[in-house]
Length: 78
Image 1: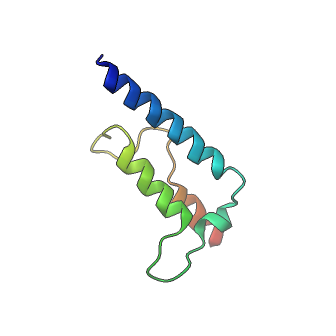
Image 2: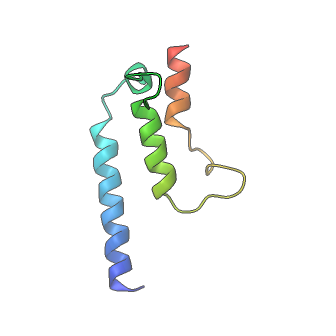
């Protein structure tokens, strides 16, 4: 594997660990809170980052065992 690709993969993994660690203490209710009707919740933002920076997924959606953070937060608010 090319050295630049190896570096990019390593940096991506470290960044993912950092942002996941920064939201560990956030409750589902907090993650689901939206600051306005046209604004995204924290959970929606994290889902977006996860989806857009993850390896390609199958046509059937997320890999097994992956749960949408927005879905968890929405269920907690119900």
